Image (cartoon, rainbow, N blue to C red; front, side, top):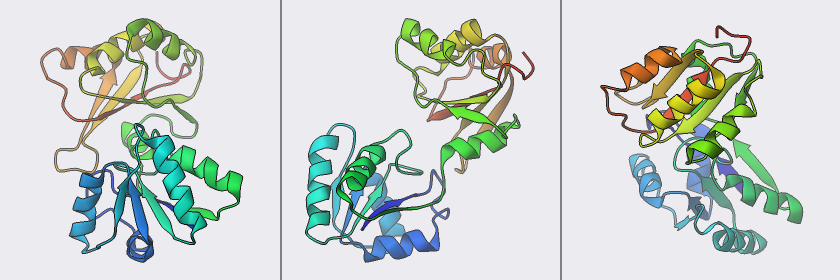
Length: 224
Protein backbone atom coordinates (compact mmCIF):
# COMPACT_ATOMS: atom_id res chain seq x y z
CA UNK A 1 0.00 0.00 0.00
CA UNK A 2 1.16 3.52 -0.79
CA UNK A 3 0.12 6.06 1.83
CA UNK A 4 0.17 9.79 1.18
CA UNK A 5 0.32 11.25 4.68
CA UNK A 6 -0.48 14.87 5.49
CA UNK A 7 1.83 16.35 8.11
CA UNK A 8 1.67 19.63 10.08
CA UNK A 9 2.38 22.89 8.24
CA UNK A 10 3.91 24.37 11.37
CA UNK A 11 2.60 23.31 14.76
CA UNK A 12 3.67 19.70 15.32
CA UNK A 13 0.53 19.05 17.39
CA UNK A 14 -1.52 19.27 14.18
CA UNK A 15 -0.85 15.62 13.31
CA UNK A 16 -3.70 13.15 13.19
CA UNK A 17 -3.82 9.95 15.24
CA UNK A 18 -4.23 7.97 12.03
CA UNK A 19 -1.12 9.59 10.54
CA UNK A 20 0.95 8.63 13.58
CA UNK A 21 -0.38 5.09 13.48
CA UNK A 22 0.50 4.79 9.78
CA UNK A 23 4.00 6.25 10.13
CA UNK A 24 4.69 3.72 12.86
CA UNK A 25 3.41 0.84 10.72
CA UNK A 26 4.96 1.39 7.27
CA UNK A 27 8.27 -0.09 6.15
CA UNK A 28 9.72 3.10 4.66
CA UNK A 29 8.96 6.83 4.80
CA UNK A 30 9.68 8.78 1.61
CA UNK A 31 10.19 12.39 2.69
CA UNK A 32 10.58 15.60 0.73
CA UNK A 33 12.89 16.89 3.49
CA UNK A 34 14.26 14.11 5.71
CA UNK A 35 15.65 16.60 8.23
CA UNK A 36 12.26 18.21 8.86
CA UNK A 37 10.50 14.86 8.89
CA UNK A 38 13.02 13.61 11.45
CA UNK A 39 11.94 16.42 13.79
CA UNK A 40 8.34 15.21 13.55
CA UNK A 41 9.28 11.55 13.97
CA UNK A 42 11.49 12.28 16.98
CA UNK A 43 8.72 14.29 18.60
CA UNK A 44 6.46 11.22 18.51
CA UNK A 45 9.22 8.64 19.10
CA UNK A 46 8.86 7.02 15.69
CA UNK A 47 11.89 5.21 14.30
CA UNK A 48 11.57 4.24 10.64
CA UNK A 49 13.91 4.18 7.63
CA UNK A 50 13.64 7.32 5.51
CA UNK A 51 14.49 8.03 1.89
CA UNK A 52 14.61 11.39 0.15
CA UNK A 53 11.87 12.06 -2.41
CA UNK A 54 11.89 15.61 -3.81
CA UNK A 55 11.82 17.51 -7.09
CA UNK A 56 15.54 16.97 -7.76
CA UNK A 57 15.43 13.15 -7.53
CA UNK A 58 11.76 12.62 -8.32
CA UNK A 59 12.21 10.15 -11.18
CA UNK A 60 14.93 8.02 -9.59
CA UNK A 61 13.32 7.97 -6.13
CA UNK A 62 9.92 7.29 -7.70
CA UNK A 63 11.26 4.10 -9.31
CA UNK A 64 12.77 3.05 -5.98
CA UNK A 65 9.42 3.55 -4.23
CA UNK A 66 7.64 1.51 -6.89
CA UNK A 67 10.18 -1.30 -6.51
CA UNK A 68 9.61 -1.34 -2.75
CA UNK A 69 5.86 -1.56 -3.31
CA UNK A 70 6.36 -4.39 -5.83
CA UNK A 71 8.31 -6.27 -3.12
CA UNK A 72 5.28 -6.04 -0.84
CA UNK A 73 6.60 -3.18 1.27
CA UNK A 74 4.38 -0.36 2.51
CA UNK A 75 5.57 3.21 1.89
CA UNK A 76 4.41 6.51 3.36
CA UNK A 77 5.05 9.66 1.35
CA UNK A 78 5.27 12.92 3.29
CA UNK A 79 5.99 16.41 2.02
CA UNK A 80 8.07 19.04 3.77
CA UNK A 81 4.82 20.26 5.31
CA UNK A 82 1.12 19.79 4.60
CA UNK A 83 -0.56 17.44 2.14
CA UNK A 84 1.51 15.49 -0.42
CA UNK A 85 0.59 16.15 -4.03
CA UNK A 86 0.12 19.91 -3.60
CA UNK A 87 3.15 21.68 -5.11
CA UNK A 88 5.46 18.71 -4.44
CA UNK A 89 6.35 15.29 -5.96
CA UNK A 90 3.39 13.50 -4.36
CA UNK A 91 1.43 13.86 -7.59
CA UNK A 92 3.97 11.94 -9.68
CA UNK A 93 4.15 8.92 -7.38
CA UNK A 94 0.36 8.84 -7.16
CA UNK A 95 0.19 8.63 -10.96
CA UNK A 96 2.71 5.78 -11.00
CA UNK A 97 0.75 3.87 -8.36
CA UNK A 98 -2.55 4.29 -10.22
CA UNK A 99 -0.99 3.23 -13.54
CA UNK A 100 0.40 0.01 -12.06
CA UNK A 101 -2.60 -0.87 -9.91
CA UNK A 102 -0.87 -0.34 -6.57
CA UNK A 103 -3.38 0.43 -3.79
CA UNK A 104 -3.00 4.06 -2.71
CA UNK A 105 -4.74 6.20 -0.13
CA UNK A 106 -4.47 9.69 1.34
CA UNK A 107 -4.51 10.41 5.06
CA UNK A 108 -6.01 13.92 5.16
CA UNK A 109 -4.72 16.67 7.37
CA UNK A 110 -3.19 20.12 7.32
CA UNK A 111 -2.67 22.16 4.17
CA UNK A 112 -1.60 25.79 3.89
CA UNK A 113 -4.06 26.43 1.05
CA UNK A 114 -7.32 26.00 2.94
CA UNK A 115 -5.86 27.39 6.17
CA UNK A 116 -4.93 30.64 4.42
CA UNK A 117 -8.20 30.75 2.49
CA UNK A 118 -10.32 30.69 5.63
CA UNK A 119 -8.06 33.07 7.57
CA UNK A 120 -8.04 35.56 4.70
CA UNK A 121 -11.67 36.46 5.28
CA UNK A 122 -12.22 36.44 1.51
CA UNK A 123 -14.97 34.36 -0.18
CA UNK A 124 -14.20 30.66 0.27
CA UNK A 125 -17.11 29.07 -1.62
CA UNK A 126 -15.09 29.02 -4.88
CA UNK A 127 -11.34 29.42 -5.20
CA UNK A 128 -8.43 28.73 -7.55
CA UNK A 129 -5.07 27.59 -6.20
CA UNK A 130 -2.18 28.44 -8.55
CA UNK A 131 0.85 27.30 -6.57
CA UNK A 132 4.19 29.06 -7.07
CA UNK A 133 4.26 31.76 -9.79
CA UNK A 134 7.11 31.95 -12.33
CA UNK A 135 10.27 33.70 -11.15
CA UNK A 136 10.57 36.28 -13.96
CA UNK A 137 8.24 39.28 -14.14
CA UNK A 138 7.10 38.84 -17.75
CA UNK A 139 6.18 35.20 -17.33
CA UNK A 140 4.65 35.97 -13.92
CA UNK A 141 2.38 38.63 -15.40
CA UNK A 142 1.24 36.23 -18.13
CA UNK A 143 0.63 33.63 -15.43
CA UNK A 144 -1.53 36.08 -13.47
CA UNK A 145 -3.41 37.22 -16.57
CA UNK A 146 -4.89 33.72 -17.00
CA UNK A 147 -7.14 34.33 -13.97
CA UNK A 148 -7.59 38.10 -14.29
CA UNK A 149 -11.29 37.76 -15.12
CA UNK A 150 -12.02 34.87 -12.77
CA UNK A 151 -14.63 35.50 -10.06
CA UNK A 152 -12.91 32.95 -7.81
CA UNK A 153 -10.65 33.85 -4.91
CA UNK A 154 -7.05 33.28 -6.03
CA UNK A 155 -4.31 31.66 -3.92
CA UNK A 156 -0.57 31.60 -4.53
CA UNK A 157 2.51 30.34 -2.73
CA UNK A 158 5.48 32.70 -2.70
CA UNK A 159 8.97 32.88 -1.21
CA UNK A 160 10.15 35.87 0.86
CA UNK A 161 12.71 36.80 -1.82
CA UNK A 162 10.07 37.26 -4.52
CA UNK A 163 7.06 38.39 -2.49
CA UNK A 164 7.44 42.12 -3.21
CA UNK A 165 7.91 41.59 -6.95
CA UNK A 166 4.92 39.25 -7.06
CA UNK A 167 2.66 41.75 -5.29
CA UNK A 168 3.73 44.50 -7.71
CA UNK A 169 2.96 42.33 -10.73
CA UNK A 170 -0.38 41.29 -9.20
CA UNK A 171 -1.32 44.96 -8.81
CA UNK A 172 -0.44 45.65 -12.45
CA UNK A 173 -2.37 42.67 -13.82
CA UNK A 174 -5.29 42.27 -11.40
CA UNK A 175 -5.77 45.79 -10.07
CA UNK A 176 -6.05 46.98 -6.48
CA UNK A 177 -8.07 44.13 -4.99
CA UNK A 178 -8.72 42.98 -1.44
CA UNK A 179 -5.83 40.74 -0.44
CA UNK A 180 -4.51 38.75 2.49
CA UNK A 181 -0.88 37.75 2.94
CA UNK A 182 -0.50 34.82 5.33
CA UNK A 183 2.80 33.93 6.97
CA UNK A 184 4.06 31.34 9.48
CA UNK A 185 0.67 29.61 9.55
CA UNK A 186 -0.02 27.63 12.76
CA UNK A 187 3.37 28.69 14.17
CA UNK A 188 4.12 30.96 17.14
CA UNK A 189 4.42 34.10 15.00
CA UNK A 190 1.52 33.42 12.65
CA UNK A 191 0.38 36.58 10.89
CA UNK A 192 -2.30 37.55 8.40
CA UNK A 193 -2.00 40.96 6.76
CA UNK A 194 -5.28 42.06 5.18
CA UNK A 195 -6.00 45.08 3.00
CA UNK A 196 -5.87 46.38 -0.55
CA UNK A 197 -2.96 45.19 -2.66
CA UNK A 198 -1.52 48.71 -2.71
CA UNK A 199 -1.66 48.89 1.08
CA UNK A 200 0.10 45.57 1.48
CA UNK A 201 2.80 46.62 -0.99
CA UNK A 202 3.34 49.77 1.07
CA UNK A 203 3.61 47.67 4.24
CA UNK A 204 6.42 45.58 2.78
CA UNK A 205 8.37 48.68 1.80
CA UNK A 206 9.42 48.90 5.44
CA UNK A 207 9.11 45.28 6.59
CA UNK A 208 11.47 42.61 5.28
CA UNK A 209 9.55 39.48 4.17
CA UNK A 210 10.58 36.34 6.07
CA UNK A 211 9.36 32.75 5.84
CA UNK A 212 7.01 31.20 3.30
CA UNK A 213 3.86 33.05 2.25
CA UNK A 214 0.39 32.26 0.99
CA UNK A 215 -1.12 35.19 -0.89
CA UNK A 216 -4.90 35.28 -1.20
CA UNK A 217 -6.45 37.74 -3.66
CA UNK A 218 -10.14 38.45 -4.23
CA UNK A 219 -11.68 37.38 -7.53
CA UNK A 220 -12.88 39.92 -10.09
CA UNK A 221 -16.37 40.03 -8.57
CA UNK A 222 -14.84 40.97 -5.22
CA UNK A 223 -14.02 44.55 -4.30
CA UNK A 224 -11.66 45.79 -6.95
